[in-house]
Length: 121
Image 1: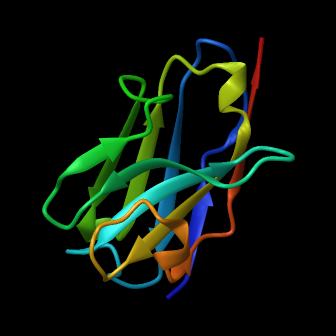
Image 2 (image 1 turned 60 degrees about the vertical axis):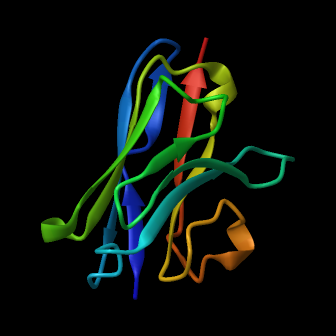
């Protein structure tokens, strides 16, 4: 399974971006998918999760601003990011697991290569 993120780039604070993560196969259908991010000099952190049953959860820092969704027909997961802040600057990664829903990154076997999001003030 290969996964590839797109949609990142530079944006001003208060702006919006929609990240996409397309998989080579149907890994997203019925499985847990998540978005993580890693800022320079920091550890990778959990951003959002979408379970196979459609349950979502978000990091407190993005709750109310970011929305995770999935289009199984397109084998694609999205992360809609609104009201972006400079603190959202990071490389964003999508991840998938056929296992139980978790925010623990080490339990995700499938990862994309990441897409850079840079928010300027």
